[in-house]
Structures are given as C-alpha cells and as structure tokens.
Length: 348
Image (tube, rainbow, N blue to C red; front, side):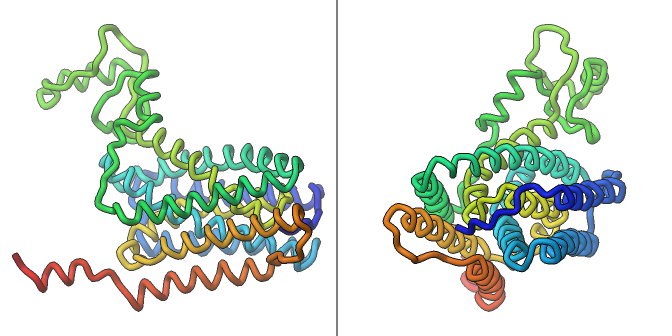
C-alpha cells in the first residue's frame, strides 16, 4: 500500500469541492424532469463525468506530482469497475419493483447521495483502523477475497431471482409507514387524502393498505425500492472501501476517487442497461480485480509483519486494473453469450 502523504491541503480540498458540487448542480439542472435518458445522452454524460475526474487528476499532478495523480486514477478506475456489479444488482431491483424507466434516474440520484455520505463515513473509519496495525489489512484482504468468492458462487446461480419483499430495508420501511402498493407519479410518500382518492377509484376496489387508522403518510413502491437500493449499496461499500484503501491510505485520495466514480454512476447505469447483454464477461473481470486487490492488501500486510519486500506499486496497480477491464470488455466481444443461439438451433 502506498504511504504518500498529502494531508488535507486547503487548495486541493476547495478544488475537489468546487468540481464535485458544480458537476452535481449541472447534472441536477439537466435531469430535473422525469423522462427516460436516451443511450446517446447517457454516453455523453458518462464522458462528462470522466472528464471531470481527470480534470481533478490533472490538478493533483500539477500540485502534488505524478505519484499522487496515479493513486487517484487507480482508485477511481477500481471503484468504477467494482461499481459495475452493484449497478447490475440495481437493475434487478428496478425490474422486481417494476419501476418505470422515467423514474429510475430519480431513485439513482437519491441512492448516489446516500452512497456519497456512507462512503465518507466508511473511508474515515477504514483509514483510521489502519493505524491499529497491519493485521487490519489482513482482515480487509479477507473481506475482499470473500466477496470475490461469493460473486463466483452467485454466477453459478444466475437464474435465481431474489424476493425483495423479504429484504431488511423493505421490511424496515413497512414498519415505519403503511404502504400504498401502486406507483403514484414520482412520489416516495403520499398523504392520506391521496390514498382516499385512489381507493375511491373502481380499479382500486380490491386494494387494502393494511391499516386500522388514519395515517399521515404512505410509502409507495418507489420508497421501498430506494430503501433496498440504499442498503444494497451500504453492503457493497463494505467491499469496495477496503479495495480502494488498498491503493492508498490517504483519506482525501481515497474519498475523492470514490466520490468522482460514484457521481458518474447514474448515467453509467443507463449505458450498462443498454449494453448489459454485450458485456457478459465483465463481471469475471471484476472478480479477477477483487482477488488482485486482496493479494495486494495481503502482501502489504505481510511485508510489515514478516519484513519481506514484495509489494505492488501504484503504477503496477493502475496497469493491472486497466488491462483486466479491457480484457473483460474484449472477451465479451470475442466470446459473446450463446444461450439464445443454442435455444433457437435446438427447438423443442
């Protein structure tokens, strides 16, 4: 693990805040309406977010040197790649809740805001724990490796569909609010009068909301979906934060890398949704990277414990991340999914 120290220089923090907040405001203004984001627009916005991240990398290069910029880019690329698997999970969640395409970017927005907050908390805790000694890195390495193993196992059970009505977040929302089972506009919560109006409609005569008295607010399926997305991302952070901390223990480098990667996920979601069928081997690349990061953490920890000199540099880490990502994309192109072809060539 790299020990380059930059602290929290005020000019770097200000540039980071200016770029991230400014980009968020632009994104909010441009996507303020509930409408489907076309693939072309999603691609252009994804490029925009990458450009913002590399603008910050350029600033780091000019003010702190090549090594710091390389650490940031490595952490950024790693978080971006690892987030792909999380986005595929979110696709499954949206599908289960039957969320219309035009409302998905609204849920993703609030989900990303939650991710920004929780990543900050986890980065602060994770980087602080490293001060306890190299055995903490061993624990982090085992966590990352376990995630890779679980992804390998889940890949063998792709046909299984999770029942999100049993999800912890789903049940927590139901404890707080009675639920109106239909989506009503882009509302996460609706008032009692709205429920009464809906119940008065003939098509809703068979609907019960499971209450015995008047309630001030009712949760809609959008709020249930958002809660599941948020908790799923929190669980994902337990794996991704140690992985990015493997690149550097500097909180500002780690958090800024994760922040810029997360900010571009909303538009990246729509790109991946359109291209999911063509990126069939990308998850395998993510698994390879997780094993690599676990190994990097393990080497760094054992170098402190046993005194050996086997470590992986920031430049090597960046090269591995980029090469594995490109390999995953190329493999998807060269060896596409053949399931549909086999089904059509062997009719029942």
